[in-house]
Image 1: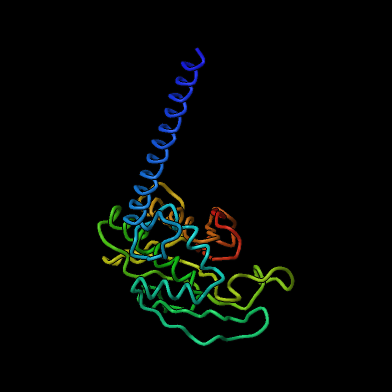
Image 2: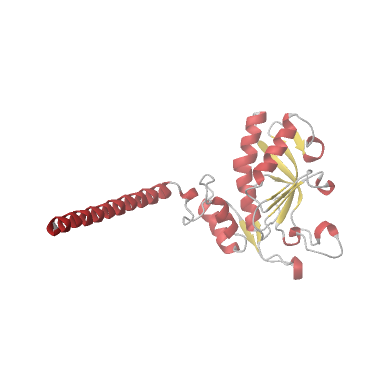
Length: 244
């Protein structure tokens, strides 16, 4: 009887050991498969270097967040992605000192392409490619030829007040977007086209919403009267998610 019990115990032990080996093999196989899948989908891989040529993925937003305080790495992303840019010398002093002055020359901004921080430039690059142009083609059949803006740098506090927190514009870490001019000449302005149920209003809401995952702050006419004529985009140090 005791020998039978020992024999059964050994068989159970072997079975448990075999089962552990099987589970280890399954886990190892899953890990290898996941590693291969991530290698083929770097936009979802948090350890893969950010490349703007990759489509947006699960890891894109966290990679964008990591660039906010690292202009050197941010510009390395532009180089890796083949995006033309110029790195200008720092300017200013105090609260309006601009250490990061980056110009993405190919952006269709009007009346000029202003220096911004590199993260703002990357946000605009992705917004134009993945949001604005697809929305314009879908709704109007043509691309946007020009985006009109009110500027990026303004050495001032919020809303021009004498006291209080400094605006992100004080360091060129923001830009105000006023209107879009399509390739066929049609102009769609935040002031005048925001309200209503037509395609122009729908387009403006679509591109506003599409900017929210790409910038820390997105403000529109829905926020307050001070933004009745423009969208405000910035890359403040806080986590992304202010979208109004």
